[in-house]
Image (cartoon, rainbow, N blue to C red; front, side):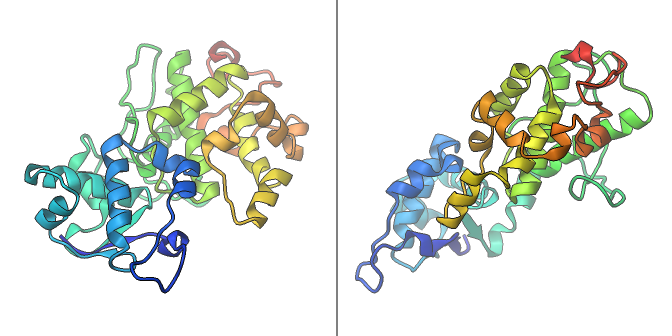
Length: 304
C-alpha cells in the first residue's frame, strides 16, 4: 500500500512543535456533513487515519497488513479497507498515491454498469459533460437506465447528457412524476457541485432525498432550486461565514427549508422576473412554472 496523505492536514494542528503532535478533531467532525454522510466503516477508518497521521506529520506509509494491525482490524479486512480508502479519496478527505492509483480508476472497477464510451460536448455545457449510452427516461414506468445513488458526478452528468439528447430529439413524453423528480434532483446536484467546487461529492440517498423533498414542497420548481444555488453566493450569511473562514455550502446548508430556498433564489434578478434558469431550459427543456408549457414537456404542469 502506498503513502496516504491527510488532506488539509494543517487544519488539524492544535499546538505546533509539540512531541507527540496534537491534533484537533471535535469541531471539524461535528460540523463536517461530508464526514457524517460517510458509511460507518469509512467514517471510523478516517478517524483512525487522522490519529495515525499524527505520527508522520499528516502522512501514513504502511503496508495493508500493517495498517490493519495498527487500526486493530482483522487481516481479512484489507480488501474492504482499500475500498474505504478510495471512498475517502473521492470525498477529498485523503490523497492516495502510488500503487493504489487514482480513486476514480479504482471505482470504475467496483461500480457496475460503468459506461466506457465518452466524448466531449460543445461549449456552454453545465460542466465538461461526458455523455455515454445511458438511456433517458421515456415513460413513467421506470423504463430507463438509472443513475445509481452514491455514484460520482461524471455518472450524473452522463445521464443528464442522455436526457438532453432525448429532449432535443423529442423522445421524451409523459414522464412520470418520480422519474422527473429524480432527473431534476440530478441536475440541481450537478449544478451545485460545479458552482461550489464539490466535484468529488457523491449523489447519495441523503442528498437525493433532500432535493426531491424540496422539489415536492415547491411544486417541482427546479428553477427556484437552481437560482437558490446562485443566490447562496450573494447571501449575507454566506459572505459572513466565508469571511470567518467557514464555508458551509453543502446541500443541507442551502436547501434547509422552503423559506431559505425562497430567500436565496430571490437574490437573483432573473428569478424575481420569472425567467427560467438556463440550466433547466438546456437540460430538461423546462419552462418556468409561471409560463404556459405543454403538459408533455419535462417540467410541465402534469409533472408537478
